[in-house]
Length: 553
Image (cartoon, rainbow, N blue to C red; front, side, top):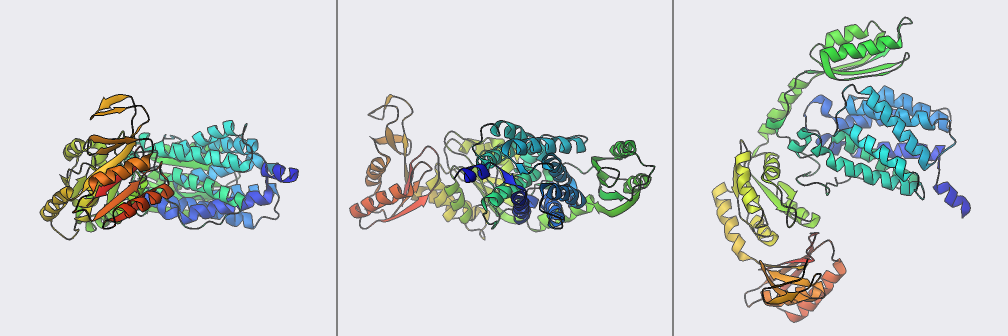
């Protein structure tokens, strides 16, 4: 047992190799998702593909290593990642890997403290490769994760605990990237490179645990509002994108470097490229130099590099032309009508998506989105007209105000006051029908459902004829508190008894994140015994604060 505990605190060289292979595979199966997060639809924006090719090049080199020693594996990791580096994020990832490789190379095992030290070294090298680093990118995700790793390493019980902690931190900071870069916030996405790095970390943990990498993961955006990833694809709002100042994405290697070339010459090349473009990355040494630059003068970039050595793997892509092609495709795919729904709870979000909502953003009690949040979500829907379902009486006004913030789209609000009304409305939606017909049908559907909810009292009060203490379970019909009790299921049971009448055919109970499926099913069994002529359905809503949201039709 002692040997097992010790092993759990260390990573051997063969295990590290397996972790790297697993990290590369996790990135590979998620590359389409990472690509879809790009806010700039240009060749340089294939972040997932570029990062995956970078890691795959490293793995290819590792598999050709002369032995399974830590030194052989890490040397191959650094060499392969540099040779295969593509795009900004791919190059940055290669530098992170180089820092990790250099730090652990001379060690027989890697423990949490050494892993943390290696991450820190990788971040320092990656930042050094970028002339003007921006916050809200893969660099930020890497840096904050590395900083957290230093703290966690001192108290982590084992490698699994350490990796789980840094993954949690990387996801947390990834979710905050839209608040750091306005272009991400406008497009409603997290940073693509940062997400790619999170995939690598997750894959490494799976490799350590011996778990298989299966399909692509769903993006966890629970820490943010107004983020929506629909089938792993985000349609960019081209009107909000920055104009392309430098048209040509230029990449190449400098190989067979001249004997007269010095490290100072490499620095001068970097300075020159910054004078004729941006997104400059120049990394390497006197054996191999990797160059990436956006410029309007690719010929001058190549000519200057030729003074240092020969050129290899030259790639020049016209980002303006790619932009035009993607914009034309986007316009061609525009549909007449789309739907935006606002709700709280991953279960409700999934239901609205299944019912053809184009976008679903988070909002509800205690989390009302702003008019700008709603406008941004509307702009992400590739449609001429958009119908908004607020699904909360406190969000209706913000939805109405969002009209003034939206351009090139007609915006209509169907004033659903709660989620059951919103679901009733979207069930009446017909994507093939005209706007006016849909507005009429969806608005009429609002009155076809009666709703109730079960939550708890946040303070002592007397209201609606009831004396409440903090923590009492309460039941509401609309805005009126009609029931109280000590158990959510008992209050929900009595609410349903109040709702059901001779015309009631269907009652649906949506249980929240603090309610178990077992409790919800047990409640329905009680109700079915009471009301034999009514059909009862249990659905997971996942909503916070409310144990149950109930609809009767």
